[in-house]
Image (cartoon, rainbow, N blue to C red):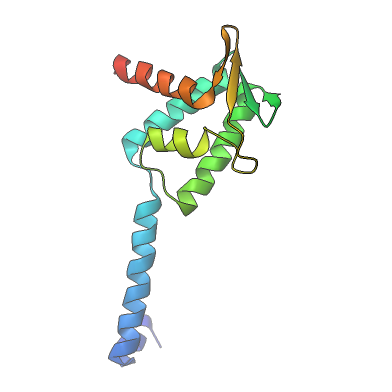
Length: 132
């Protein structure tokens, strides 16, 4: 039996349930997608982290830029599936502010000193937006 034949042969209640499931999946997929501008800004921030001379401090340990980027990308993937990210600010707040396991704030250790990672990234985001 083909899908169309199956669909037509089913009682109205079953067809409505099937339609509801399809619409729910479509709505979830639409919600999980990051807007194009936010995607571009987040990717620019991840590039900035990766190529910075600063060290990313997470739970008391320092990480090189490439390791920090990989960690933030994993958190971003999780957020895309669960909560949704709609802006670069969402990314900074939800993925790059603190450890989701320990609750400890992320920091960056740069030649000029130590600062909170979220402040460092917000400053860079503003700098990038002024260039465009």
